[in-house]
Image 1: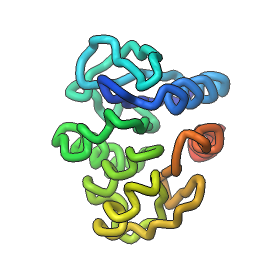
Image 2 (image 1 turned 90 degrees about the vertical axis):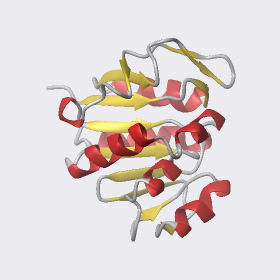
Image 3 (image 1 turned 120 degrees about the vertical axis):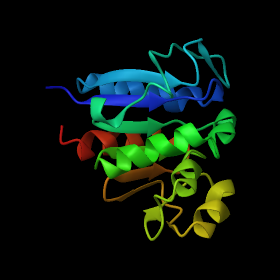
Length: 170
């Protein structure tokens, strides 16, 4: 059975290439992709891409997926303290599912308490936020620690997506 992956994008100003490239690579490996956002209204990327959500954050459940992927971009900052998002990433982590975040989105994982004592990377502006919440910030392009995968920025989207593929055993 093909792994099911939930990709979370901000309703506005997600990083287009992080979403599009990650989705493309995962689909190439046969993964079933569900796009998740705050509402079912079209989500808009920073550079004009449109993502059509299949599910809202409220409806998202770890039991239905093998992995959760959080896409970065300026719009993701709105999610840093959003209780629904923090609860969802905690739910996925407790269930032992792969949880991946790129660019500034790893701050969500840190705010949810998932990076305490874990190796992680993120966009350089997020280094302090990760360290302040107990992460071992490496600054590497892509970092894995258990089922947690983080990536520095859109430059490393391909490596990020490939690491997700590898983590799911495909």
